[in-house]
Structures are given as C-alpha cells and as structure tokens.
Length: 400
Image (cartoon, rainbow, N blue to C red; front, side, top):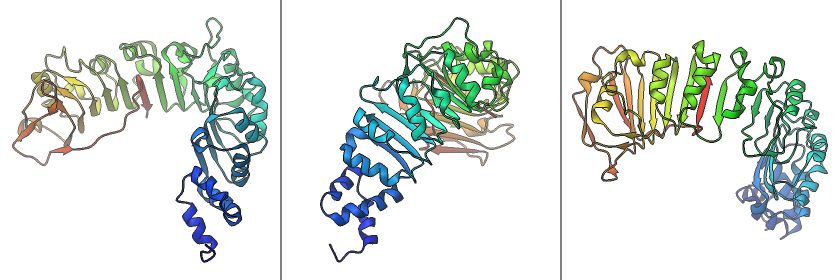
C-alpha cells in the first residue's frame, strides 16, 4: 500500500460509500489521516440515513469536524439523540440548508431551536421534525424557506411572527396530520406573505393565505397537498382572485381529480402545460371537442388515466389546432388498434404538433395498446418512449 501515493488512495476512497469509508479509517493510520480530505471534496452536500451509515458518536464527530467549514447542505434521516448532541457541538458557517428527521419523531422540542440556530448561523432553508410549537423559529436571521410539515403541536399564531420577522420566500405547511393548534379565523396579513415565491399547503390551510394570494407579485408556485378531494381545482377557481383575474399559468397539474379538463376549459384559464394524472373518467361526458376549447392551452398531458371511448379520444385528437403537444403516458384504453388520421389531424394547423405515446395499455387484455397511422405530414410527429416529469400532488400550479 506504501506504493500508492496520497492522491491515488484518495481517488480510490472516493468510490466507496460512507459506511465503507468509516471501516477504511480503522485499518491503517494513514487511511485515517487521509479520509478527511476525501470527505471535504466529496460532501459539499450531506444527504444520509444515519441508521444506514451506522456512525458511532466518535466517527460521526470525526466526519463532521472534517467537513464543517466546507459543507453547504445537511440532510440527516433517523438522527438519534447521540448524533444530535455531536451535531450541535459544532458550528457550520456555510450551511444554508438543514433538514432532519429523528428517532423517535418527538425527540426534539422548542428548547433545542436556539442551539440549532447557533450551530447554523447562516441557515436559509430549514425542515425540522419534532414537537415544536414554533416559538423560537424567528431566531434564524437569514431564514428564507421553511417546512413545518413534520412539526407536531405547532401553534399557528407563531407562524405570523415567523413570517413577519423572516420575510420568507417559501413556506411548506400541510400540517393536517400533526395536531397543530390554531386560533379561530386565523389570517396572514400582506406584510407577512408579500415576499413568498412558493406556497405548499393543505386545502384547509388555504383560508390563512386566501385574502392576500392575488396580490403576491413574486409567487411562482402554489401546491395543494394532503387528502385528495376530486373537486379541489373547481373550489380553487371559485375562491381565488388569481384565477378570476385569469392569471397566466405555466403549469397546472392535478392528480386523482375528476373533470379537470372540463373545469379548465369552462373557466377559460390560460395554461401553457395542463397535466392530468390519474383521472379514471378523463373524457367521459364529452360528446365532442372543438378547436376553440384548447385556444388557451399549449401542451396537454395525460398520465395513468382511463380513456374508455374511442369517439371522445378521436374528437380530441382531431381538434388540436392550437396545441403544440399531446402526451399520453401509461394510460388504460378501452379500445385498441387506433388509427391516427394524420391529414385530418393537421388540417388547418398553423404550427407542428407532437404526440407522445408511452407505455399505454389496452385494458381488457393488459397488453400494450396498438396504434397505427394513416398518411403523413411534416406538421405532425409521433414520439414513442418519453416519460415526462410530474409532481403527483393533488393540485400543482406554476405561475408565469
């Protein structure tokens, strides 16, 4: 082993997982001395399960001491009290993102928050787990992005103080299962929410933001999480001024909802990409489509939906003059051997259209859905094998 220089050994150690690297440090003093250099290069972001890494308190201390001045993000899963004590004994001057879960989940309480703030003086993103009422969360002077989803016993009135002091850019709540405490008719004033760029909430938490939502000029994302309700989108459109004022949407996605397509068409929403995930009645109830129905939509995505009637699907495909993309991914069809009539599809089109078909199934046989084409045109391209990205949230909205 003396033949290999330090650079070669460090390169070899860099291919090992963290658990194996710990074992290596016990084999030879030279390896023990070299490993911190490997960790400094390798772990600008730490994202580990402490159960899988199997750190002793001593080895965890050695690891953190090596990286504490260079690491920028720390995400720890299954942290025990012993690990936590080692962690807060150090200061991480460059960490801006700290997220953790603990064993047990109620391991930490409010008294620990000032200690965490001292160890992470430049924290901007924080996602804790524990019994936190939120009383000390405003002690992070640079906090911008906060997740409260895993905080049990949170007192909602403290959210007002946190947001007023920290001027958050992102808030993630979705606390319906965390037994939080709220006052009656709680509302967040504009000066608490005016800097928000991203909001993730349960539908029951919407009233806290509802009054000011249309005024948020920086808002880029709104996500509705929690228990799925099939009429959530209709409720949002009915309640929120940002929809009534026809604000331009970059993405609108629903999952396990019903009649999303009809709701968007009837509301006249301007949507660049409409994504519908898992709608078992996707086209049911539509006798026919017209080109004008899709005048405000550029791209249409169907994912794991049921498409039972051939005439409804054909009516949609033949009225896509304003669409640039139709994607059908992992959907169940009630008919097979469909023929795309290309001359009919491209009739009176002003720009090319792409149709993406990915792993669709003929439901009665559970075999791949069969299709073919009639004719050809440069105005239409059929793509096979593209699986696009989705949030899989009940409602996800990205604003222009």
